[in-house]
Image 1 (tube, rainbow, N blue to C red):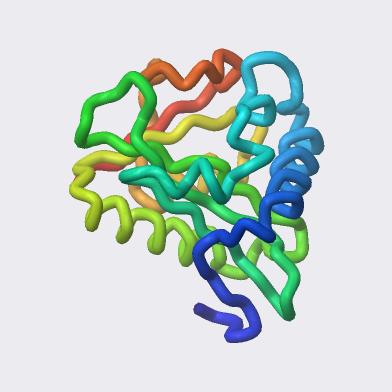
Image 2 (cartoon, rainbow, N blue to C red; image 1 turned 30 degrees about the vertical axis):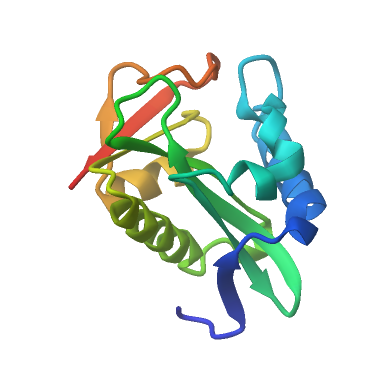
Length: 163
């Protein structure tokens, strides 16, 4: 990691309120708070428990004891058994532009491979331009339509990474 002051670690139960606040703050700032967005997923309020299930993991970025963002992987709902989803990847402004998206994505995809997944799907909105550029640079390819049954009908950009 470029800045040793940042740490990426597995989510803890004590992180739930902070991660929920970050998800809601970032999504709302990008206009992604209406119906059909993941901001309304039940897991947002208890990310720790949601990512303790088989084939799932969630990581947070922390600096000086303050959680600044996170990302996770989980089986793609309604998808093939070999496909996971990169989920809930959001950072507060002070954590952006520091290479942390790559670091946390690397950690998530390393875990995905260890779980036996062969593909990773994600969905977002076109308005999150920096995120879309990052996913494309990382190697995700754009899809014309969504995969699985995430229930996120408001998403407008879909990506897949295969290995």
